[in-house]
Amino acid sequence: MAIFEDENKKFLWGLGIGLVAAVIVREVFPSFKGVGRPLAKATVKSGITLMEKGKETLAQWGEVFEDLVVEAKAELEEEAKAKAGAAAAVAPAAPVETKPN
Image: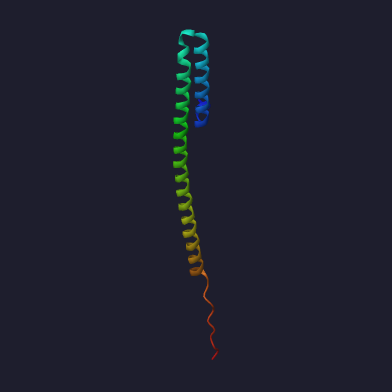
């Protein structure tokens, strides 16, 4: 589903569902009143874990992007040197003057 594609949205949805479930359990089922707090705590723990995993994934993507930027810059420099070398090779030599006899 499109709603669950973003890590932050997953976290917020999970947190919201967990809190709603905790309130429902606490209010509707009085015999389960002791379950509300542990359920909320478990939801928060899951959210923290998901957030940490998201940070790690983002850091990995950042490293990959930095590597791509370095590689692209190196290729641009090589292309510029190759063009400069080709331009020097193609440039006509200065005409040689001949003396009339």
